[in-house]
Amino acid sequence: MGLGLGIGTTLVMAKGGPAQYELRANDYWRVTMPSGMRFDTSGLALDAKGRLLTVHDRDPDVWQIHLPKTEGELGSRVAGVSMVTNCFTRLQLLPFAREKFDRYDTEGLSVDAQGRLYSCEEANRWILRFDPSKTLVERLPIDWSPVRRFFSSDKNASFEGIAVGDDQRLYVANERSSARIFVIDINNYKIIDHFEVSPRRSGFSFLHYSDLCWFRGFLFVLCRHQQVVLKVDPRTHQVLAEYDYKKLENAPEHRYQSRYPTGTMEGLAVDDHHFWLLTDNNCETREQDPKDRRPTLFRCPRPDTAEASK
Image 1 (cartoon, helix red, strand yellow):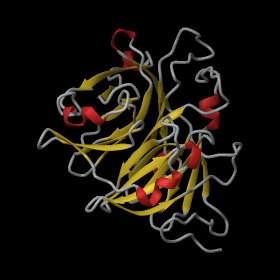
Image 2 (cartoon, rainbow, N blue to C red):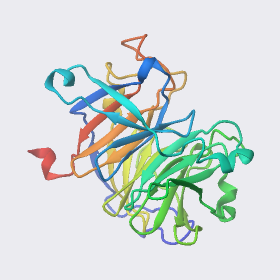
Image 3 (cartoon, rainbow, N blue to C red):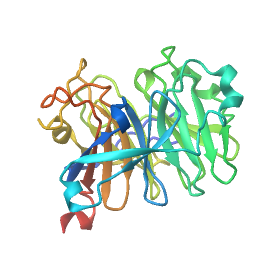
C-alpha cells in the first residue's frame, strides 16, 4: 500500500501497520501551584537544560515544573512550579495589545535548538516566539490562507499544539473541528504542507490533537480522545508507532471526573528514555479525591528502547 505524499495528503498505512506499545508510568506527580491557584496546563516542552516547561490557557506565561529531588520528597508525589519571568511578559506583548481578542489562551509550547520559545495562542490563532538573546517576542507573520478552510469559527477549537523541528519546519496542530497538522517553513513563514494522521483503532468519530513534540527527526502527536501518542515520519506522514495510555489515564488513582467522555492529556514531551504526559483536567477533581483539582504529570519509560527493558 502507498504512503500519502505531498501537501494536503493523508497517510495510507503501510502493510502491517505501525508498531503497538502500551505506556506505563514509573512515576507521577500532582502539579501544585503556589497558593492553590487554578492551573489548567496545556502544553509541555523539554529545553536543552532539561527543564520541563509548561503553559496554561489563562495567560501567556511560561512555567517550569520542579520535580522532587530527595527520597523523602519523591514519596510525596508533589511537583512544584515557578514562573519563567523573562519571557512572554506583558511588556514584551504590548505591541499586540490592540489586536488581542480576549485573554491569552496559550495552548502549546516548543523550544528550538537556539533556545527560542514558541507558543501557539488559540483565540487569535497567533504563533509567538521569544528570543532570549534579544529578550524580544515576535508574532510570526504566517500566511494561513492555504489552510484557512480548516479553521473553525469556534475560537476554542483552534491551535492546540506546536513543535519546532531541526528541519527548519514548524508544526502546528489544529484541533477537533477539522483536525489537521500544518507545516510552516520557518525561513519564509509559508505553509508548505498539511496532513492528518490517526490511530488504527478509535473509539471516537473525530480526532483531537492536543499536543505535538519533535524528537530526533520524528513528530510525536498526542491524540487526546483516543488516548494514544503517534510517532510520525513528518515527510511521508507515515505513522510508525502507536503508544497507548488508556489504562494509565483510566486507573482509579488517576482518573478525573469529567462532564464529557474524553481524555484529559494536553501535554507531551519525549526524550531518549521517557514519554512525559501532562493532564489538563479543566479544574475537575480526581474521582478518588473530590478535593484535588491539581493536574498530574506522568513519566513513562519508553517501551521502544533497550533502556526500558533493563
